Image (cartoon, rainbow, N blue to C red; front, top):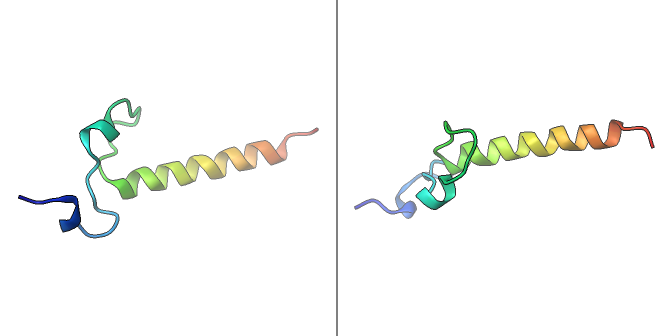
Length: 53
C-alpha cells in the first residue's frame, strides 16, 4: 500500500476531499494545484496593482 510519503515531492496525489469541488478537473497532483494557485495569485497581483486609484 502506497502512502503519501511514498511519492516524490510535488508528485503527491490529491486526496479525494482535496479534489472535491475543484473546477479544473485535470488537477490530480499537489504540484499542479500549487502551480495553478501561484499563477492565479500573480494574475490577481497584476490586476490589483494596475488599477487606477
